[in-house]
Amino acid sequence: MPVGSAPLEFLGELVALRTISADPNRRPVLAYTANLLAKTLSDMGFSALCEEGYGPAPIVWASRGPMGAKNSLIIYGHYDVQPEGPRADWHSDPFQLVELDGLLYGRGVADDKGPIVALLAAIGNVRNWENLRLTVLLEGGEEVGSPEFGDFLRAHRDELASHLAVLSADCGCPDENTPTIITCLRGIITGELTLRTAHRDIHSGYGGCVPNAVQELALLCSKFHREDGSVAIPHFYDGIQKQIDREELAAVRSLAEREELADILGVGCLRDIFSPVPPRAVHGFFPSLEWNGIWGGHTGEGSKTIIPAAAYAKFSLRTVPGQSARVLCAALEDFAQRNCPPYGTVELHCAIHGPAYAIGGPSEAPELHRLLVLLENSLAQEFGHLPLRLREGGSIGAVSDFKEILGLNSLLLGVVPTASHIHAPDENWPIQSFHKTRCALSAFFNGLAR
Ligand code: BES
Ligand code: ZN
Image (tube, rainbow, N blue to C red; front, side):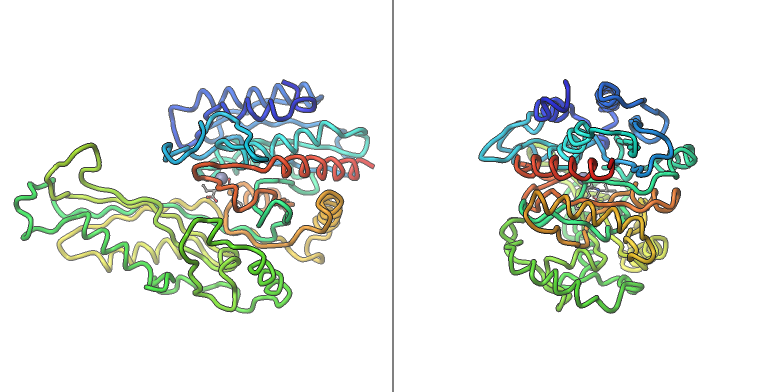
């Protein structure tokens, strides 16, 4: 389906493809989607291919425009998505694009299939390729930490490192009228904690005299945070920036007033641990540790009267610039061991996905800032004002790979509002965000092509 004349139909086709990278059974649909995207790019005049052997899904690699063009960019996006569950909390089929009251609904519609389609539609409007070269890289393993994306970059360093910078639209913004340029992404570590208290499950008739792994794990997990919500692991906040730039603080404070974040997120309150940094901005400035899931014993239908022998928890830890993932993993492991009851055993495994990324200032990265100003002006034309420059709490593994392996900085465009509920039920994207993003990017690319 041509992207240019029917972009939303194309988005519908992509949303219907269940490209869940965490599910090994979805490999065929990931490969199918990669081929579909490569074919689409090839129909747009790109030389396109799917490269296999790097991570859970092929990397779509397509280029157009002369080598050595005045302006050259890598366009990065990901066609994989997070699992859709809990399914019962969706108001529509997660794998069907639905438009309702100005919002497009479906898994991946905002993260990152919608922004990819907006980018492709904008690229389709480039009128003159003499001064512009674009290399589109779309991966299918971002949502599992881009495990081998760095190896792909290493293998093609010569072809890829010659670009000026990377552009991605895989970031967030406060609301649909306020796009952002993201100045900092957090790094991420994911992991699993296992606590074992017995060789096998025990009849709960013995309850009262034997330890219970679920209970012990709940107790252990609760020790990782203080009552106010801050992390209790010694040295957890080491290395973070002590002084926050006054201009940056003013920007986030004005933002906090404009947004009812607790309402949008559907929570009863927001923790305010790091005053004067307002809750809205905390995720950009501080590291965090979240339990993503906890289970053990019988969780199926009906009852089963046992005392579970083992219990499990999954976590994600976000780092900020100045922190070492290895040091934090060791601190976590040590904390778990020291707080394990003497009659139990604990195991903690970490997977490091990448460090935090921060764009340098204009003197460190003049080329990036030239492009950034052009992008900001293109956004201002569409949205009526300049985007905000903000830090983000999320992570994109590939962005630090681009920096570390190719030395390339990233222009990180945030066009996905907080209310888009990415990774959650009822993921959505305002249709206006789609159109404005497409038009702003069109102006940006045509500006570069001049
Ligand atoms: N689009 C997000 C990253 C993001 C989210 C940036 C919000 C800015 C604001 C991306 O698809 C994502 O979710 N990344 C994962 C990476 C992880 C699985 C290694 C993340 O941050 O959880
Ligand atoms: Zn995501």
